Image (cartoon, rainbow, N blue to C red; front, side):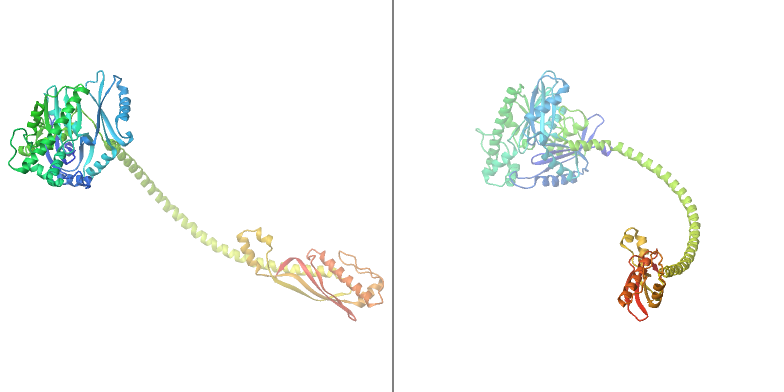
Length: 600
């Protein structure tokens, strides 16, 4: 037997949990192989965390029964689910979904986007349609799933407990009277399930086991837990009427408390029967089947048979369901009355059932669909892996070829690198030689420029003028702002280096004008020409010093102007000191500015 063939079913009641493991049979049915029943023992008026208790109790039940975690079918108590039976007019099958959705929005007492809901068509579907709507708040399902998943189980279907019990009843009781009534007495509520041929109706009444416990609490002033223990120890339905009470006063009070609650329950059952017959056009039940934890209180069947005046029996969910021989008959007999829901859940997995409500949230449905497609995803992933592997082999081969080619290229690159190293050495030697040539050319250029400057100065000197010394004016080279802006960073670095080289920007000149030469020139009456300018007209030598001084100054200015017009000298050339009067010669100083500084 494969592990995947087993069926896990879990019924979550108000006061207890029922867990069962089934296996499918070749005949088409199921067989119970393991089960566990756990009580939550919660006071309905306390603030104790119900969800934590569900998880811990479920974990203990799994360990007790030896059930391994896995996918599980879940049923929730009827009082947690809003259920309603509505009639729809005859319509096309294609429009049923839209009409039912509209009815759900009109009848469900919560915003439709806050609930998980489902519906089931009941009956042959001819003429008017009977539809059962079931809805549960999404947060209730989410909290319940968190408890179940914390215990290691994975919910894959959510049924409503009364409908699971209905499926179990129909499977185990092939021959039922025209109308049968299943009375499932739980802790907080009692579910009434009317079963007719081809139809079903369900109603919950708020009278159940907890009502008996609360009656005992008031009668004896006890806590809920103590009253619950007293109920389990002494409860039975008092006979009433002329029957003598129990000898024990405690037992007598307990039995009368039970009868009081059972009387209220009987009244609710009668009202429900009348409602079913009047509003649902149903038949009066001729058989009552009891189920649920409260139903085993002694004389319950006798009480209801007497009050309803119809046949009453206990529902046996294992009439057509096999029980593994390892489970003692006595043991399963003590639990059969609470196992109907888990049997109905197991049948949902094995075969089509009359009612197939599923309140599994859409997110979980999508997850299940994804898991069903996982084998295809795995195959696709294997295909991708295989493709990647083929490409990996291809790229590996190409990498080997590339490596071999790279080694060949590396050897060639090393050869070129050696040649480059030699060329760099030769280039360094060429640069060194070039620097030396540049220096020699610069020296030759300086010498030529010096000769040109001396020649141009001599060409401008008038007769009678003698230069006694000529001295260069030195300064560190400085690049102009325009030059600095119009060059790039490497050129500016080169200019900074050149700026540290001394330059000659001007010549300081000192000379004399001899009077006798000047007078002889004046006597002859032939003025000495100055290159680029006419010599001053001094035809007559003045007899006074003042006249001579003016003439000497004019001669110096003419010399200056002639220099300014030369290509090597700037118009900033100026006379530094005027001629000083002397007996034979007049001394003067001049600063001759070069148009282009000359590096030394």
